[in-house]
Image 1 (cartoon, rainbow, N blue to C red):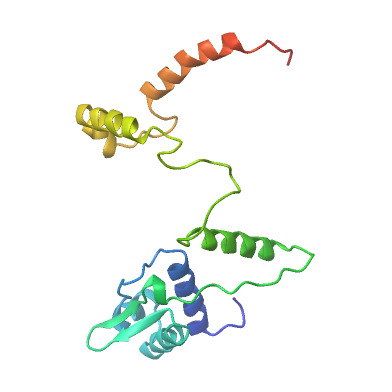
Image 2 (image 1 turned 135 degrees about the vertical axis):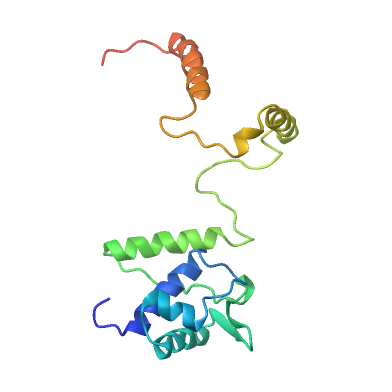
Length: 174
């Protein structure tokens, strides 16, 4: 980031927050006053930042209301770049981000993981009944988070079933 002006650094930060979904379409950006306090910069720096984001089509100004992230439909699609044969760390990260971006599109079909989806493969109706019964019996499952090493009940079940798995596996020398 060296060599960039302060507002350019802020523009890059906001672009990343918008593109990765931390700040979502329709959400209001901090007021100029709040943004000044957050970043310890002048109002003109924040206004310049917001103007650049607006010029790039990422946010919109609403009179007497503030600045808002544009809806997903109006956000510009990421540009596809031609990659050189030499892959540098930054290029690899860019490729990963491009793939992740394409996966969020409505018409995307993922053939890379060979992981089936939907009711054609999974017994979703049966899962729905099992999950409903389980959540009625244990509503705390929706709010309690088991910290590492994980749920003791789950670990116990896995251990009990692993004994059966081990009986099926041929013994090999390590």
